[in-house]
Image (cartoon, rainbow, N blue to C red; front, side, top):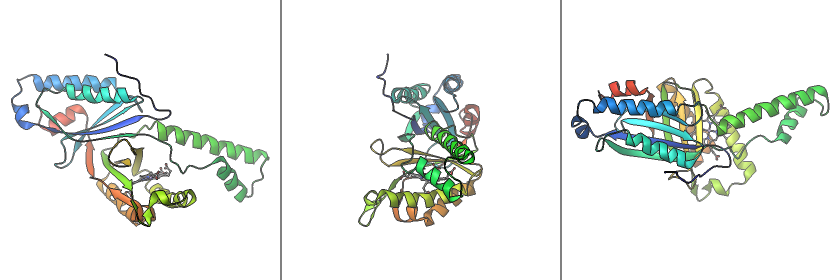
Length: 271
Ligand code: 76R
């Protein structure tokens, strides 16, 4: 059976899936069914283990919002849809229950640095357009920017111990309607946001995926971290930044531990 091919002009599809194990269903399994499920899942994950996509990354939720969590990435919508169903089909009927899911896509931010701004910043450094050094520096900036855009669209997320996920939107009410601000104002506000974010380099690696018209919130925020306090601190510090203070609206927060499938099996007592 082949699914319709649904491509993006740029970027990839991302799906976050949250499941509960039905413990009653699980205890009713025959001896080898748990092992068979694990083996099927390991095969599926091994077949989808590219640095960017297609990829399936597994986590355990910490707390009672879910048991296991998966993040899927694929270029085409049909591929992500198939990976989702193939993942579920590894489990015996009556053992897996959906807790939450989120569909989004990677995208370039609206507020990217233009070629004009790059040149302007060099002129401010007293470099003269047309000189060798000016052109060399401009080329370096252009190359760095092209690389940045590539990884925004085709992210290769670090495999750190923690993954925090939450959906969010920008407020649209009265004088705090993000979408009625002009572009220059939004760009200036987002520059402040990015300044706060960059302070967390090395502690937080962020993936912002867009979901306007695709899911119930406007963005999915995926934060990789080594420590719990890094997650808390960045979200706390952002609350004071104007973009978040005036315009941020948040969905549920999920804190997840990165675990391989065998580790998940032990952690969740599935053996
Ligand atoms: O892509 C970039 O790094 C450029 C600057 C940038 C943009 C355009 C950036 C930087 N973000 C951008 C867009 Mn962000 N971000 C969040 C959250 O808790 C909250 O208040 C919000 C959740 C965090 C923690 C975070 C972290 N960011 C966005 C958007 C889209 C907005 C739009 O298009 O209108 C959202 C919803 C959003 C939310 N942001 C950074 C970070 C961090 C850590 C950085 C710096 C990354 C770096 O420089 O490497």
